[in-house]
Image 1 (cartoon, rainbow, N blue to C red):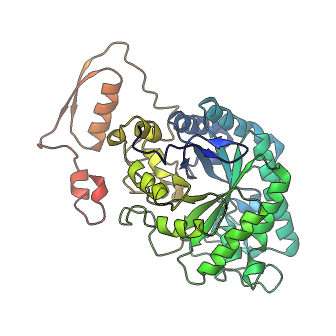
Image 2 (image 1 turned 45 degrees about the vertical axis):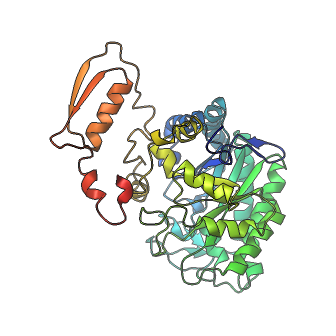
Length: 427
């Protein structure tokens, strides 16, 4: 009998079944932005699918040029783009997994001069002032989302996730903070929600019923001028009516001063909010943010606070997360420590993502650890993070490894870091 019966239970969506309740949430790795990296991206996701995750969501892909996060960023709006994406979907399906394409329009968060938004209000995290979308521009954007979803289906994706959280374009239309419009796309919540609702409707019409449409909805904006709870619920119900299969939970805008994912945030801190929304809807709801152990995930599901669990950074740290949990080896999981140093910090510095506790992440085609043809006796001097990583990999390859350190215990500088309040998980 498994220790995680709720987490490992399949979920029947009617037209397809997820093998468990675990979602690898969307993370921007930097590999999505250049066509020549799609082989690396395919290997990255395939390794996570091989590890047993039920559903993977890609990093954000723009539906048009105005939606780019970075100049010439990852986009799916031409037929020629399909062939690169097929490398990813085929690799994941070969390992028994399912994968969604996240459609992300950056809006005023884009680091490029083509940025648009609901209104011409500059973001504090981008140097570019956006152009307010015209009526024609809005209708064109809706069509671009639908075309992107249709091409995603052609590329072999099992569905799409529409990114409507974290302060990107759809959040910018939903919230009075950034939507100062006086036309039918602004003002009352019924008008402000018109864009995301019509996008979901058009996507559903374009892809049919046998295709997952997940919407990542901001349950707490955590900024002045955000939506209240009644508006948040009203939007979620409208998205359900529009054709969404699943509602994913998002918390906080990128410009918010309230932390949501760092180590100092208590584990599963926002699960209760997801549970509150779940009671209002008739479709599955996903809990997210600071859930990095199978025990935490199981407890959330057992309490009825969610139907699915999204974990993003934990799958950078250990692609075998689900397989180890299923095998009763949860103590062997290489746990995410919530440091953000090699994932989010790299992303905002326009560098490829990696992981402080798993340097192989996003480098699966470069760091190939094959069994040693001639095992050797190896001494590794220094039991800090680098030394322990080298010793572990060498041992996995079949070498006889001895690890030396001048101290009585291992950890190196991590032992100092974990003494700082809020960084206890470095242990």
